[in-house]
Image (cartoon, rainbow, N blue to C red; front, side):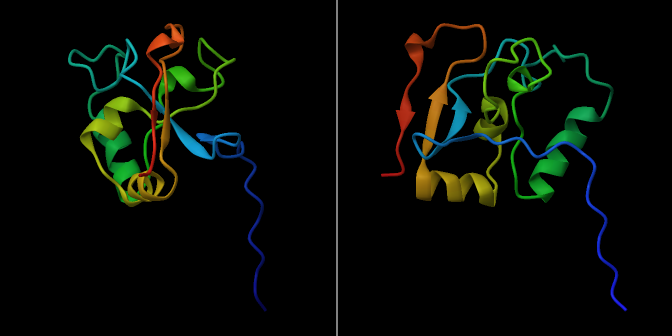
Length: 122
C-alpha cells in the first residue's frame, strides 16, 4: 500500500515571473536594506545570512528580495529576485532564466522607476 503525501498547508510559492513579458523580475540594484550590504542592515541573527544563502544555493534557486515580499512595507509590488544575491551567486535556476527568458529589471520598492531596464536572453 502506498501512502499519498499530505497536502502542504503552507502558502503557495511566490512567483518572480512577469506573465506579460515572459521574463523574471530582478531588482535593478540592491534595495536600501539588502541583506548583502555591509553592516547587517536587517539585523539578522548570527549565521542567518549564511543559512539563507546555503538554502538557496543547495536548492539551485535564488533569494527573493525581502522588500518585495507581500507582507512587507510594499505589499503592492510583485516579488523580485534579490540583486545582492544575483550579483554574488549563480545557480542553475538563474542560469536557465538568463538563457531562456531573460530578466526584467525593476527598481527597489519605493524608488523611482526611471532607472528600470530590461535584459534580454540574447
